[in-house]
Amino acid sequence: MNIHEYQAKEIFKEYGLPVAPFFVSTKATGIGKAAYELAPGPYVVKCQVHSGARGKAGGVALVQTPAEAEAFAAKWLGKRLVTRQSGPHGKPVNRILIERASNIARELYVSATIDRASAHLTIIASEAGGMSIEELAVNQPEKILKVAIDELTGPQAYQGRELAYKLGLQGKQVNQFAKIFLGICKMFVQKDLSLVEINPLVVTKEGDLLCCDAKINTDPYALYRHPEMAELDDPSQEDPRVARAVAAGFSYVPLEGNIGCMVNGAGLAMGTMDIIKNLGGAPANFLDVGGTATKERVMEAFKVILEDPNVKCIMVNIFGGIVRCDMIAEGIRGAVEQIKISVPVVVRLEGNQAQVGEKILNECGLNIVSARDLRQAATLAVQAAKAE
Image 1 (cartoon, rainbow, N blue to C red):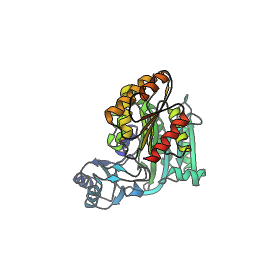
Image 2: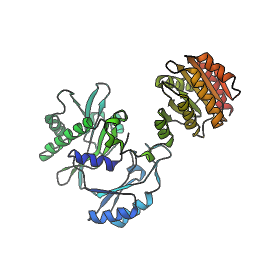
Image 3: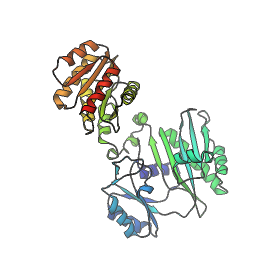
Image 4: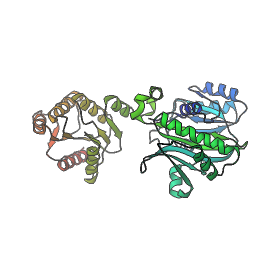
């Protein structure tokens, strides 16, 4: 789960990380008033959306006066910010953050995440802050520094100091960085996070370190332990179809094709998408309805899939293990009848009560085609999508 920058900065403050005083408002007049309280300028104003690359899209600006800050807010509030990370539809801008601009001498990069190869919490840092870490990894990988944190000993202050020296920090900055280093690690573990990123961590002309940006991603599977983090969720930043899927208990990721996919099991879903692509088709989504799919969940999955206007055919691929295929067939039949699905539906059932399920679908008299194997089902789905 993502949270907004202003929310992340509040958490930074809890853990002793240095952030500039800031205000957030849902109204342009509120931003103008905040600018007067922060005076004198200049100020940095930022659209609060769950997306990176805001600056390049015009969602971050340096303004000189409270009037300019208010004008920026008036321009963006209620609009959608489209960045190279947000997708073509962008993210709605409901809040603007304002803070006094910092006297920046240098920009650094610092983040914490799990290194999947070593399974360690890893601190990543670079002297080349303020730019995309993905681009840096490709073009200048030698500028990326990594420190693995031992699970038994935890982060050590000397590790932070060593990293500070490698980043070219001096004097009081070394201990300031060590404090930030320890704070990030403590935050990451205590809050069950999947990412903490500061880009940039600036060295001011006064010689101090300051977190000018803050990004936090939480582990969604650990939110039951952190109700205070779950409360920070902003559903407006998510695709409404994804929100519906989460509420119904299944996984859904929208794609750009025209064949809606409903599968039980993530691996089977990936395989289904692969074979559709291999046969010249294009999946419209990833949808894992779950290994214990119910009739109600199947019906809700159909509704979510059909909210995509590009869907020309729906392919259902169910392996009956714990779940019974006849129950899934009843859910498919009920969904087609209730929702009045106009596009073709191709179904492949295998496993527990598969033959009974096929009989239900073959005798229902609806626009449902039953297939005996995965390749046949994918072929029929691709043909149906092209014919629409």
